[in-house]
Image 1 (spheres, rainbow, N blue to C red):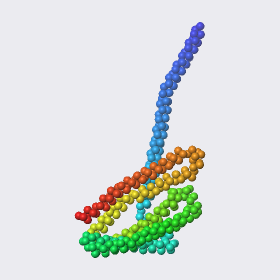
Image 2: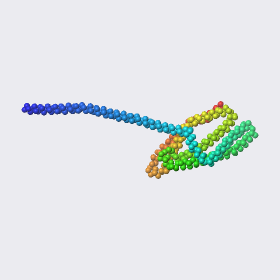
Image 3: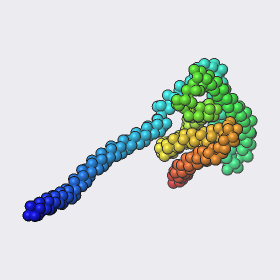
Image 4: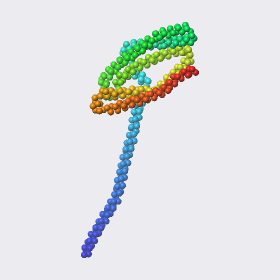
Length: 354
């Protein structure tokens, strides 16, 4: 009996010690679990911090790259706009585009000589009109009937001579501009279709809206260039002719007017410099708007079949808004320029009167 008791007590002790061991082990596990969770949490936190640090470093590296790319684009646009107002570059391009016609066509040189001769006759008629007009009004103010009749006869004689001179000058000038445009357009078309340049321009770029440049820009170039050249030449002739008259009457006034005109020209050029790029952009945006309309006309069947009216209309409206927005800038620049030119035009009258 005692042996059985001891055996039972041994089992009980073993059972109790086993329970205590399991309880201690579970307690140790429960104590280790928070520590393990804390260590795992700290490790996860370190990993997250490292990832965040890498992302922040990548973002910090990406921001300067995007900023640098934007700065490069702005610099390139500024360089292009500066090229459009570079006088030396414009002069070299003008010379390269304008001279081949006059070198290759003998008839063009004779036509230009004829226009220049008529321009000189026109300037001479203007000078004669100024003298006759002066004597005419002097005779009228002094009530000199005989002198008045002579000046009136001279006036009508000059009118008979001057009318055909002015008409023939304008006719030959426009005819020469048309011949120049025809020759230059033929040369541009030959270059456009040689070596598949039309495909290269469309595939790889290089010139936007080549159709508009050939059809309209060459026409504007020939007419405007010839008109500008003849206007400058006529202005120089008038300046020399009328300066002689004014200098003989009032030398001091002649000096004042030369300085006044020079300052006004330089200031106007400075203020209106921005109009060069604005007008160039306007031509581009108008060409893009016109091209979107032409594309709908040429692909009318496809647009109708696939129901692309809203997409095409959205594109057309977007390009129209761009053209209108740029033209608003042009109007604003012209307004700022006219603030100076309008007042400066009438300021000379106050100075001369004073």
